Amino acid sequence: MNDKVKILLAEDDTNLGTLLANFLKAKSFDVTLCVNGEIALARFKEQMFDFVILDVMMPVKDGFTVAKEIREADTEIPILFLTAKSMQDDKMSGFKAGADDYMTKPFAMEELLARVNAILKRTYKGGKKETNFEFGDIAYDYLQQTINLSGEEKKLTTKENELFYLLVKNREGILDRNEALRQVWGDDNYFNGRSMDVYITKLRKYIAKSNLVEIMNVHGKGFRLLIKS
Image (cartoon, rainbow, N blue to C red; front, side, top):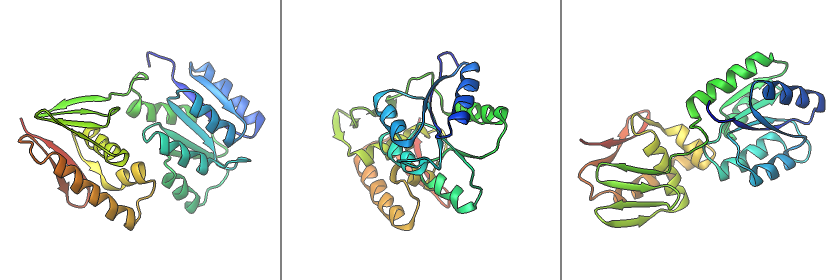
């Protein structure tokens, strides 16, 4: 990593939190340590972070609640849960809340580092999120939430924008249906799935005049943004 990766760490066990923060700082990360979920959420709203590590069982706001609120503001920032629980249901709750990974205490510091680095390898862009795209005959601005096709501009709603961004970001491959549901809707249940299908239909209408770009269904997997040469 060229720039220091900024990590938000929320752990109510003072000794463990300090130990984790010092270890990660020694590995050249910029770490902000918070002792409960409410403080962590406040820090997240005040500053820019590249990675979030949350203890599940925290006072005031638990890790699942904090993760859900973070996901409402940022669908992409990696979230790693730390917990003393090992039940399968707890792990599923973590992933539904938007987790990228889940570690059960006790764990080795080197394993934590390996997992953080593995996630960052997939997600970190040097602190800069690509927001402007040109492909086929379409120009897309994520921050302005606009699709420009042949001089005609379409303003997207927030959910339309987040879903289209995932399609664009995964344009070299396939956007997994359940992953899209978790990132945009927060839960991959049946009713959210029906809602997403409606949004996909809307996005198809917005780019219907394009001769080079279309949104395809990939049976049993998800969607693909097909860009013709």
